[in-house]
Length: 165
Figure 1 (cartoon, rainbow, N blue to C red):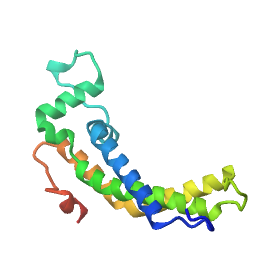
Figure 2 (figure 1 turned 180 degrees about the vertical axis):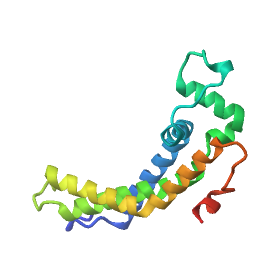
Figure 3 (figure 1 turned 90 degrees about the horizontal axis):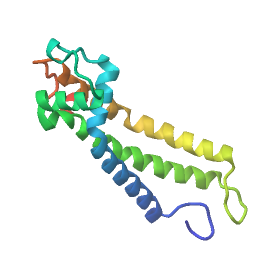
């Protein structure tokens, strides 16, 4: 921030955008296999167990990871990571940048520049709305890619670009 105004400088905006984007990409890479399972369960419900595995006890998550790895390999566990990364880069970059901009705009004129709870909520809501508008098409692609491996022999998308079209 400059000393005389509430307008953030370009370096501050780039730092916020870069930090948000990097954090999102790192987190998405670590949790991608869990995100694949979550998305598939949301779309298709609980998996039906075959007779050989009907009495297997254990974690649904571990069982799902094993099944995906066995049927689709490591690639299946990271299905949808490309559009997730493509969405997260602008997602967190837009969010943090807009949040800081809105906070600066809503900032009081006292010397500490504190925001009220309501002003913080408005800044966060505005940043969230801008982020959703900017990235929603990529989240749709991610979901389509993550769920396509559930039906044997059906692969409607060859790449992120194919699914985006």
